[in-house]
Image (tube, rainbow, N blue to C red; front, side, top):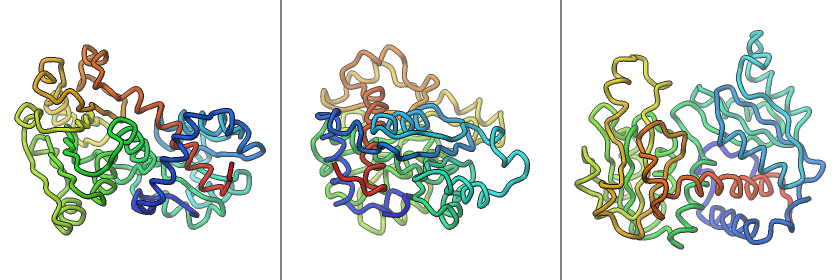
Length: 305
C-alpha cells in the first residue's frame, strides 16, 4: 500500500491483518523492537496534536526507527511561504515514510502526489483521520472480539468530528451494525455521509437529542468534544460546548459491558468521575493507537518480522 488517506483505502481483510499484527506486537514487543532499524519517519504536523503525533513517534521508536519533523506550521518553511508540495517533496528526500496532519481537507492527497515516499494522513481538517479509526477498531476488537452486531452511539460534535466520520465509514462495512447519532441540531451528522455510507447500504440508524433515551441500547458510546477550532462564531461554540456531559449517573442504565470511547483530548464532556468505571476505555484506546500505528508503519514499509 503506497499511501493511507482514508480508512476505506484499506479492505476489511487488510484491517483484520493490521489488528492481528497489533495484537502480536502487544503480546511480543521484543520481537518487533528492531524491525524498523535504520528507517526514518517524518512527522509533518501543520496543526497541534498530542496523542497522534506522539503515538506515531513512539511507534517508530519502539520499532527501532528514528523520527524527524515539526509540530506546528510556524516552525516549518510554510511560514516563509513554501508550498505544501515543495515541503513534502523535500522531506521525501530524507525520510522513508511521512505522517502528516493539516487543517485543510484534502491536503494529504495533494502531498501524496509529490512526496515520493508513503504518506499517512494523520488528520485533515474535519475530513478524515484513518489512524484514529484504526485505533478505535483495535479498541473495539480488544473489548468485544467482534465488529458485527453492535449498536454504536456517537455523541457530541458529529458535524465537524473527523474521527466519527471515519469510524462510520469503517464500521458500515460490517453486518448487523446500528448507529445512534446523539447531537444538537447544529452539530448533526453530515447528511452526505449518511446517504453515502448508511442509506445506500440499508444500514439502520437514528438521530436523537439526548444520550439518556438510548443509553440502555448501546454496546459502544463514542464521546467527542465540541471543537472550538472548527467554529467561525465564538458565541455558537460557547452555547453548544457543554451540551453533553457524561457522568456516572448517566451510565447507570447502560449495559455492564458497554464501552465508553473518546479520541481525546476531552474538555469536560466526560466527567473525571467516570475514569474509574471499568467501561471507560479512552486511555487504553490512546495506548492502542501506538500499537496499531506500529502495525501500519510495518505494512507501509513492507517490513516483515
